Length: 215
Image 1 (cartoon, helix red, strand yellow):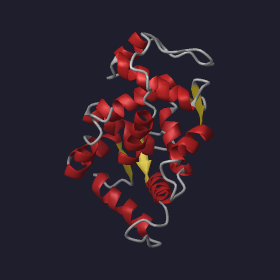
Image 2 (tube, rainbow, N blue to C red; image 1 turned 90 degrees about the vertical axis):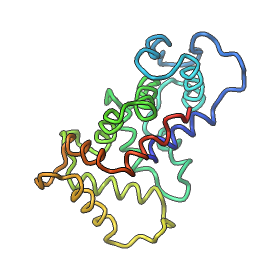
Image 3 (cartoon, helix red, strand yellow; image 1 turned 60 degrees about the vertical axis):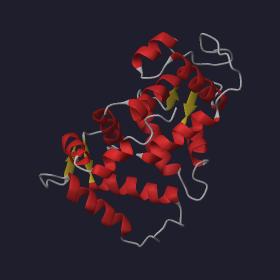
């Protein structure tokens, strides 16, 4: 969860414009995709008009066309993990952001997800995270999916992960995940099981609050 929110929040903060005054509306020149109006996005998210303007300028700076394809997303995300290979985790993250499943992320997709991750309720944050882990979108997390996610995280963190990884580390983490989450021992984790288990874990609950005031 922290890897999702932290890097995205860092990206938007680094792109803060130098001008003190921002236009009342988003700058929409030289973009192929015209995002929704500020008022509509403000109503749909937890961001103020000024915050949306700042976010948009950072988004447009990286993606002048107004949309992000998967390769561009991977390039941006990998900048924060130079010691490892973030491409697989970025692929799963891209799919979670691509709400329309058309192979691109629009500004609306970006701020809607960021609003949930930074300022959503506990349930909203956990639902979004469950959706990230549920790779095939069948409503369940199985061991194969969780193995892919855990391996992708280790690849992203790189070979210098401390303590050093052993060959069976991924399996141990997946087994521990299912021991905690799979309440009825049927081999899959449902959304309800995931939310309940996370709410019972103080460390997870604390991690959900780390980035609430990051922007």
